[in-house]
Image (cartoon, rainbow, N blue to C red; front, side, top):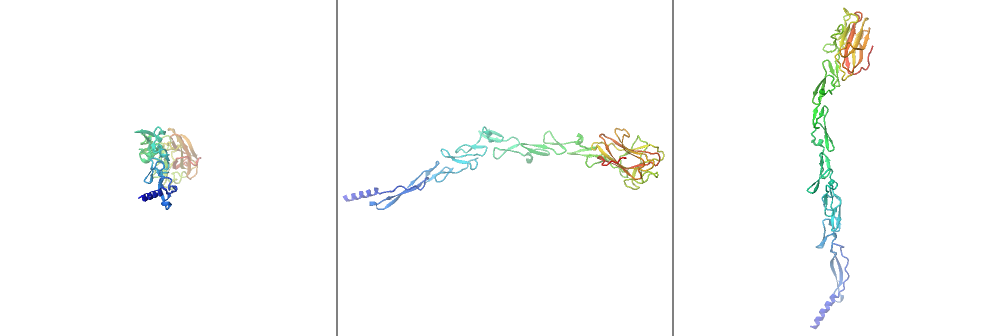
Amino acid sequence: MKLRIILVVSVLFAETDASCGGWRSCSSSCGGGQHDRTCDSGLFGWGSETQSEACNEFCYNGGYYSYSRCSCHPWRSGSCCEYCSHIYIAHCVAGRQECGGSPDGIRCTECDPPYQPAGFNNGCVRAPCSDRNGLCDQICSTVSGVAQCGCNTGYRLASNGYSCTDIDECVEGTSRCNHNCTNNHGSYVCSCVSGFTLDADRHSCNDIDECKEGTSRCEQNCTNNHGSYVCSCVSGFKLEADNHSCNVEPCTFDPNTQCIWKDAPSGDDFDWTMTSGETPSSGTGPSMDHTMKNNLGKYLFIETSGSRQTGDRAWLVSPLLPPVSHPERCLQFWYNMNGPTIGFLSVFKTRQGEAPGTKIWGMSGDQGPEWKNASVTVASADQYQLIIEAVAGSSYFGDIAIDDITMSPSACKQELNP
């Protein structure tokens, strides 16, 4: 019995006396790891063993260690919660986040307007109206304690919630313009096509009665229609290519033609005579008309045989000619003054009934058997008439003929004067 007690004591003494080395480096600097050491074991130092234990069981930035690992905040990553990871923050500009603070958190450093940074773990908050108008483009109002942006008439709030974009009423068809619509910044302007005027409501277009207002430029007749007007001429006149001016129809005196040059009802001594071929008196007058140049064509002449006296006058009178569009006209006609006792052929311009008026062209004496052209510019600022006067010579060899009277709506290019 005494011998057994001594052996037990000896074994216990041998175990507690074992020699162990120092702990080796931890396998991880944080987030939990292992380190070990070697110990001698057995009686009298016979054998050895390795001892291990956990180490560095801690986390950074507010993480906590549990179940052999670090549990991190959503904005932290890494085995020790050492990295900053961007997370979704409403209205935060991408890439504009940073971690830090105490306690640890994450904050947005730049927010989409009209929001602004609110510090760690507070995200982006709406800027109040008192701060730079709530970052609104135009109108900022506070509703239930929160700033809200709005826009003036003619603008629309953009999808970003703070910018105002112009509304193009013309493109969107909301302008109510009758005719033309021109968009401008924040509004629009209506206008009308030619022939219409803008109503007082600034949207409707009303027809302009150019005939009634006297703006048509029609020389004679004017007929209003919707948005425009039509000019026309009285009988004996033709509408010029400008669709406004009226000019005397050419007067050829031939069948199926109309001539508004007329014999004067009074003031002269005799009338012009219409004929074809030769005149009744031989040795005077033309052999045929100028237009058709045959025995069928007509022309006017003065018969100087019989009871005709030297100095007797025959007048051919034009219609009234208003100078509205043409202050200058070119009168042209063909004449024949063939015979030894030819008198005078003249053109007069008369106003306000005076006759024969002012002489503007004249020819006298024998001009040979051929038809000749007369061309004279007539200028007047007032309404006027023209009178072609033929004066009988001293005998029946004084027939004077005219044909193809025309008037052009401009000055003559080359005047043919005596």
